[in-house]
Length: 176
Ligand SMILES: CC(C)(COP(=O)(O)OP(=O)(O)OC[C@H]1O[C@@H](n2cnc3c(N)ncnc32)[C@H](O)[C@@H]1OP(=O)(O)O)[C@@H](O)C(=O)NCCC(=O)NCCS
Image (tube, rainbow, N blue to C red; front, side, top):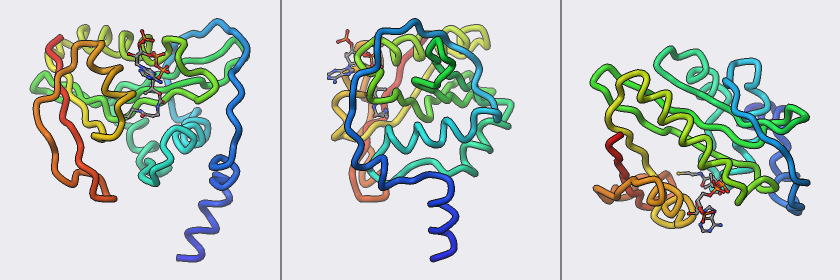
């Protein structure tokens, strides 16, 4: 266990992120690009900054998703090529897409980046003839719920103790 913790510290200095002060980034022009295994370290670090509840995807999970042909993944970058946000969507042959994770760096929030990432992902899902998209969100994550609701996602089910800390989730669904 101690060894695992050590390896984790080598990759991501979590304590540093926990105490970070957020200074809004200067105005920028953002572009959406594919997210590949080349960006594994960057997405892993950004994910840790976005999700502080202690249920972050591991390096292994991201690596798996980035090598999975049924997974669409995109990043949104600044003019200096820094990753400001990301989205992962799994698809299946029954015509369903699943937003598995989305995050935007705190200093780039409220600039419509999540909006752009979801719009782009939905456009790509449409091209694959995906007609339904679903996702799970913590009941306490009212910001993300507002984002999804604005996009036309509806809560269809409450998922009891869905998260490791016992918190319930909402299953949200949208027909494209
Ligand atoms: C949720 C998250 C991805 C939103 O990213 P963002 O780029 O700031 O979102 P946008 O600027 O595109 O906002 C889109 C809409 O989301 C909602 N929203 C976003 N931030 C909000 C906030 N702080 N308060 C209320 N609503 C908010 C609004 O409806 C907003 O539309 P509006 O600006 O027209 O009011 C970002 O806050 C984040 O990374 N959070 C941590 C990770 C997370 O919770 N991911 C979702 C897990 S299910």
